[in-house]
Image (tube, rainbow over all chains, first blue to last red; front, top):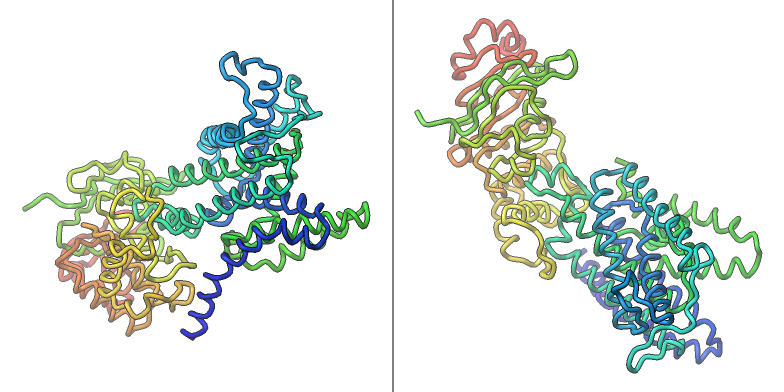
Amino acid sequence: MSETLTHSRARQMALPWLGMLLLFAVPFIVQGLGIPSLLGLATRIAIAALAAASLNVLLGYGGLVSFGHAAYYGLGAYTVGILNAQFVSGDLLFGIIPGTNQLWFTLPAAMLVSGLVAVCLGALCLRTSGVQFIMITLAFAQMIYFLFISLKAYGGDDGLLMRRPNIAPFINLHNSAHMYYLAVVCLIAYVLFCGRLMRSRFGRVIAGQRQSERRMVALGIQTYPYKLLAFVLAGMGAGLAGALTANYAHFVSPDLMHWTQSGDLLIMVVIGGAGRLWGPLLGAAVLIVLETMLSGWTQYWQIIMGPILVLVALYSPQLHRRLDLSA
Amino acid sequence: MTAPLLQLRNITKRFGGMVATNDLSLDVHAGEVHALIGPNGAGKTTLICQIMGELRSNSGSMTFDGVNLQPLSPPRRARLGIGRTFQITQLLGEDTVLDNVAMAVQAGLGHSFHFWRDARKNAALLTPARAALEAVGLLPRAAMRVADLAHGERKQLELAVALALKPRLLVLDEPMAGLGPAESEAMTQILAGLKSQVAMLLVEHDMDAVFALADRITVLVYGAAIASGTPQQIRQDPRVLAAYLSEEMV
């Protein structure tokens, strides 16, 4: 038994490194295959995986089913979009904040905005749990969605176009390989950060309250501030993903925050296995590749996608264990 | 006589028209095992929930080492030094036995806003955790997942987790429930070994264990204490015999 244990541990250690190597090799592979358009697909997957990885902090490790995670994704995207619009027009935002198209400003700004909103909404949402938590996160996300629909100054429901992506020294986001590497580096950095975080004492509290809130209370641990910090870190990760998607698509719209987007993120986490470090990447890849293939094949692709997702939900043992549905 | 560690005075808890705890007064002194017995539905678990703060009392006063417990949240009460075991075990089922105790050690070390070091490789957590497992005889099971433990072992782990907090008072909610005779005997031995180190409020149905361990016994019927005294006094109290003990003691 110990032999298989060390064997599986060695495999566990080696797999992420091999995977990361593979991620860095993707631009060369698609070049070699002669299908450079696949790089765009890979970039979309990496960005979605980052958003899903941030949800995984809540859903997978914390057992907190946030059904409004797309709000933070969208807020990150709009931060980039609005800062760019202000930069182009030259006007100050709220009369004090100058617009910018500098990537190294817009990415942290997106994380900051998403993080700040996550502090406020998380502080309220985390006072509930279970089904109420699901509903209230959904409700707040929809409020933000409709706020941006009504925000005519920035395109309303038509969305906001960015003529050019952000700029940074040595990085040209018009170059699809540069865009891909930026997304992949952000994804890997965030996932490794989460992995480290979840093994720390902080992470142990997050995992502990998922398994038994009552136990944590009996140990004298007030779980609320820990959950709130996890909520903020998750919101910031989603904000970063949103900022990347704005730069990738050169376009932001309220659709990024729609509840179906939150649902997609949940599905990605579940497909990949909630609480698995690299699960979100797997989930994002499966969902986006399936969606792309099926929708290219028939316009009724959702008829096929639906049953596949039902099967995933039925046979995903991690889901049942993590969410403790059987208990 | 020194002031009691835990002092309950005229505690009452009502659920609508039902009185679950009726004007109850009770002391637990340092180093003492105070057993709380009574038939099912007497309000023993309700009282534990009141002491731990999961339920608010309607009236009465409750102090721990002179500190008024009533306004404190459940985690605050735990941090004052009240450890607790659950009748239905509340453990981190996906984690290992060692993880569970290490979590308690971690909780005892103050806040957990530490983000970098691997908690599972931190000797400051693992060494005391192993010691607590040793104390209840569970060290050989340290690497096992809790979900794979036998019921009796989970009960032992509950105790190890509570001990790892280094509490001054242990509130034990039926630590023998569901244990076989040999396991009950072993648990009684473990608790007897802890007697001098920590005060205990012991809720238990197993009369052999109660009379072996308790320094004082309070008998609860319909939320009210009908008798309180040494095991000898309780054995001979006619009200207790009538209400509760007769069937089991004959």
